[in-house]
Amino acid sequence: MTRKRAQLSKAIQRDLERIDGTRIVVAAVLTITKDQAAKYELAGLTLDSGKLAVAEPAPPPHACGIWAKRNLDGWQEKRKDLPKEMRDVSSWAPNWNGSGHHLVTRSVEAWQVDHHPARMLTLSATILEPLKDGAIVRFRIDQPLDRTDVDFAENLQFNLRLLREIVGRSQVYCADMSDEEFANLQSVDWELIPPGSADRVIAQLAESKATTAEQLEVASERLRVLERLSHNGFIVGHGKFARYFGARFGDKLLVLENLEYGNAMYLFEENWEELTKLRRTELIKRRDPKVHRLPHLPGWQSAIRELLRASR
Image 1 (cartoon, helix red, strand yellow):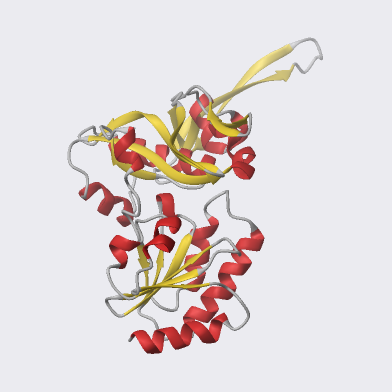
Image 2: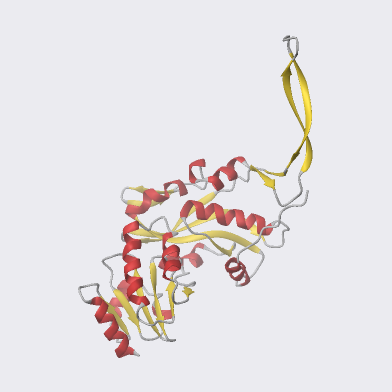
């Protein structure tokens, strides 16, 4: 039977094009606070004596979802893209005289079936950088894939779905990246989203298990304010900046927001690609006249409009 060919998304194909070498690994880098540790317990993250800690690599348990179950048990897939085939089905029927049973066999049309064995892939959690109230954590499907293999696309799609099911995000990386290189990713992949796509921004933010309904409501409110400011597109962060979003105004101006209600909004007049790699505490210490910090106090909506007019 011909194997069904997996179709990778264009976004994943673009990510693969940026990776040198043939060995690929599926991973996700998330900033997790201590009070969110319980949400990632099945992914191997625990809270030990007030600090985030990780368990030994292991296959994700059944409770994680359908892809974790398939990883442990295998599964059968009906091939509805192929014509049905005749199949003999047998069952026991009672004899007419009521003494015993006899075997009855009949032919029926049935879908062809692919049998997928258990993969037993292991998931590991690694603390890349401890933070005051949490840590930057790398979750990874430990078995690397070779992009020259004939089943690469199918295996990659499975690994992406498995990790996304467990931690809410999954991306492709070079399998030979060190922990230090993962820790230094910073804001490598800001995702640019066109104007009028506020719902898409919310959907992207909602992918993380660490995001609450209250935070999404706050983000939606702030996006409505940005939407009315004639911007050139939204921006959403990944990795260390997965909780950040904002809007661009021309080539230089960027307004950056955070999911946390108490955090301030930032406006960068230039070099935002480099400045957004800095920690929030470093930004505050710099006292850079090209970086404006705007707390969410009453009237902040009018204040951001004034800052934009003055900066353009």
